[in-house]
Length: 79
Image (cartoon, rainbow, N blue to C red; front, side):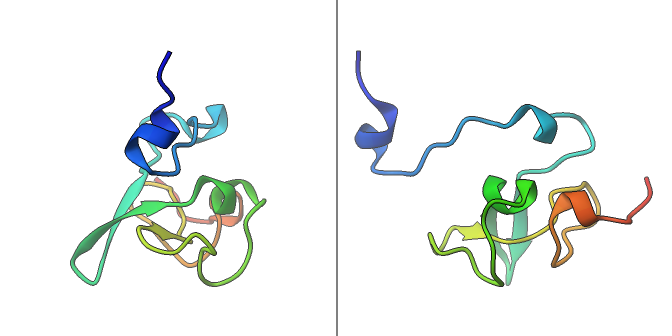
């Protein structure tokens, strides 16, 4: 069986159950570029202003319509 992580050279993460659903987004536009929201930041396990893995990962809220500079568990956006 082939390993997708080594095939793509990427950093594949399984989608955490608590980040699934219609009110969650996993990419965000930053300076016109599509970036991936760090699951670790969303869960509180990756810290700091910038993701240590670098682009294309960003530390932003993954709640649909928010994308603020905080993890989703600290989000106060309604809707």
